[in-house]
Image (cartoon, rainbow, N blue to C red; front, side):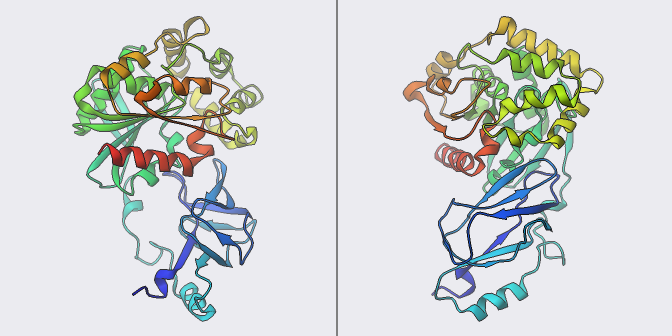
Length: 377
């Protein structure tokens, strides 16, 4: 028998990334009394890094809207309620009165008590990483050129519901070493494998974005027994074409005015390239050694305006289980590359999303990743 509370579904302020502690409701996309289906857009939330849409995690009637536009709420605060139409109003009011933000009164699940970032001393140098979840399946997230582990802010906790998830900063990126022993694709592959060895990952599902996709493919070919499957998101390594203007523009930009229009290439909605994102990347680019590291990687991997390595045929021959996901409006690597693995991979091209499709269409990408990882666990 289903109890009343099981028919009342809380809508809470999401946690997007390891550093997010609060978010501001900017507007609801559904009105009170509306029927809401799983995955539909519910409201928009602004954080210090990005503004994005919160998708419905359940189906029901939007019985209460508690989060007011313009107001900042802590992560996991109750901002709305879904329920079946025959659930009495009094039961919903009692549910709201009894709700306590997990962790605020000692009732947390402990996940947020873990260190946000960790560091591993590897053969490739010191690498920063994050670890979330305790599932039997292990997933490793590998970011792209100029990125860092926070590129997975909408991904890591979603996948950690059913898996142990690691995300790392590649050498030359984030807070990892800026000294590159080998800036080539092979060198970055060895860095990933060295990280796995250091933290005790025997085998993992590798999820790679952009350059991280090529690095993941190279690792699967270099150490096939250690890569259970590949998920390639707007991946390099599946064709020659790349927006070389983006690569050189990112390396050369020294001011907010220079960098922001470059970052707008990453999104279908250019407005998502926020001032905070621009400032964070400028701060990173000003660190000692970053400029040299990025130039060395670009010269090794994107010389003469093209990608120097295409790995599609080798991955197909190796029969590595693979998922390919792309944003239809990608302005860095053409979405046509999504077909490079043919019938050897499941592929999905998502409309109204660009190169950072895992951020612009997080719910859809996370659902694809979960299905793929479960199928090959």
